[in-house]
Image 1 (cartoon, one colour):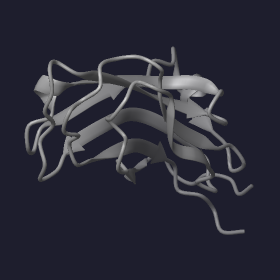
Image 2 (spheres, one colour):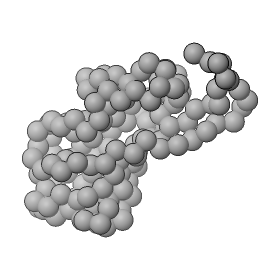
Image 3 (cartoon, one colour):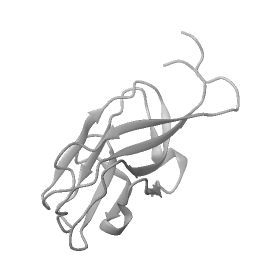
Length: 143
């Protein structure tokens, strides 16, 4: 693992498209399973942006959890997406729930997973959209 260089951070997003079925039903779903970024960083927040199709239904809600590790790993952030928040172009975000940067840190070999919990109310029309995992890292020295 290379050392870090300088005090500045590099911030970027890991985008996860919401596949068909993400907002239908109330069962558990896996959207991202053990993705390994391959570098060390700190997760800052989880976001959802609605695309060109708005959600519809009778007050539906869905809960999504970003985890470090597999689908049963440590919860870093929880985002509840309510039907009212899924109009076209709507933007939602939640900060990482970790108490400090160390708890939100991942290493070169850690994985990230995004799941939908068993909860909520199904939508009758699911919104198109993308989840974004905001990450910051320090520049690393060349090996």
